[in-house]
Image 1 (cartoon, one colour):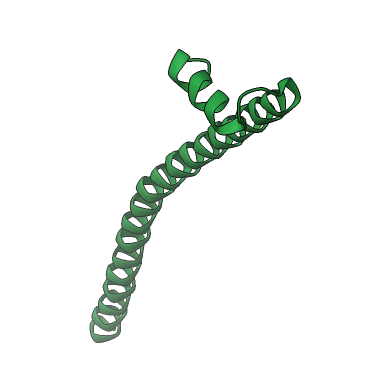
Image 2 (cartoon, rainbow, N blue to C red):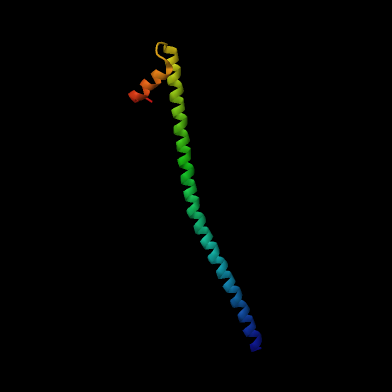
Length: 89
């Protein structure tokens, strides 16, 4: 009887050690995922803002070129430079 009890206790302790090891691994993985996920989200948001800024810049440049073409007189490149130099671009 005592021998069976000792064997059973050793088996239980082995299972408990496995469970603790797995739980520790899962908690470390969850912490790593949380850190990386936040940084990925920040990078994605920064990229979205950059793309939005670039698209707005392209819109302003194209509208400036169209306005320069319709006004005649100066070439579009010169009027774009003048607009950018004055701070409107």
